[in-house]
Length: 256
Length: 313
Image (cartoon, rainbow over all chains, first blue to last red; front, top):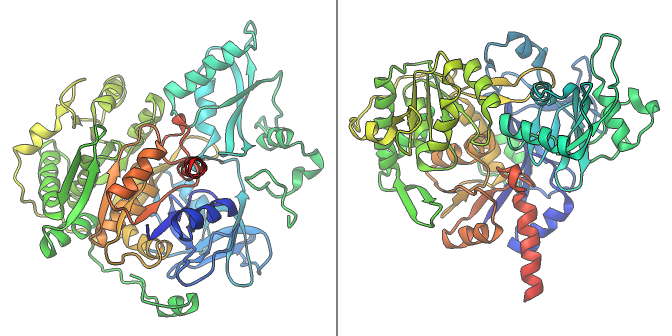
């Protein structure tokens, strides 16, 4: 082997060490997303790997950490990872969805929806998502489609889907379900619901964990507060509810 | 696309984009090499039974040209969407090349998608044709009534489930095809991505996206390509990671791609594949390679397997 590249979710220091021991090479981590891919990378040939960091901006792409107004933030500050347009790798638009396309950009920046920190040398660290996207086993999974599917099951009255920390997959999909009257919240029903999603939607995004609850936390406008459900999982108090998102490995980052 | 450099600063300083006004992915990854080095190996595919199939760039050119004619025969024109519901196999690769040369828009679809996920993506994209296998044809047969745009399902395994036999139709076509002239900014593919609220969104990419991927691909493989490089990934070609981090960039550079469908990620088989087929470069997602349903964690499973191996020794 001459090279191994890895991306899709953060590469731990352990895997970096394993790569050196097994293949005698440094695994290069890189970063991107479907809309704007391969924009940050490591390159052991010319720069040392920093465990916990994805690498530096790939030449040709202007990548920065920006605040909510799209202003570039200095090193060491948590913000959103953004890419300046135009950029040859960047997508054209969302198919027949101009509203989503507009929301993806802020002025000259494409917003990745990923939070990060850049250090003095330009290395970027991935911190987590700024929304409810679940990153599990390398897949980016949106809760909306799973919730829609769950709602099709005859026993389900309400459903909310979040990612909960998992040592192997980074996160796993967990569904909180309010049952319709007359259904018993038992393991057989949980299994049936799991298979229901697996068969209809996709075998890689069914809820591995299901918890039956009496009610879901809702906003005044009736929107499910997924963050509250997530925080219940990680045992965080509501005091942190206004904080920026948790890191995807479940740790509350000190720099937040 | 990267200039030689010994430091990151030097690399950034020397780099310039080279994006032509007219550019077609299919011509770039296939016809270019079929002309310059027709006998060069494009693909080494290991079948489920262990048999090896090999394809030169000239063979991929001819197969993709026949496929383009077949799609045209079924009414597919420039700008039309064509679904590709296939795992890693040769047809997947040359179907993409054919769709791009036709000026149509490829819609990669993951083979593990269930009916709801497929229905949404096919309805939303308005796909007029889908190239798939027997398994995919069976899934699509149950959705046909809800997919008014879908004219034809081309089945690489035969003609079950109201599908049309892909290979039978392809073999009758000419191996010569004049690719449509496309601008670098013209649309080439739609890859669906999950949203926080509501249904998935189809990210529409232009032909230039392949050129845009090159600096990152080259950097993450320490100045890819080098002499004797040969690349493989367990990531499915329905995702941008398999398709645009590995397959298409490798072919842009005339580098041989190794492929195999792992229904269940088998570390023993993966190590063997790396050794026997002389793989020099790999893209390995840290955990999920392609099939989460089968607990697939490419790097970690390889790691565990390797630890056991060393203990035994």
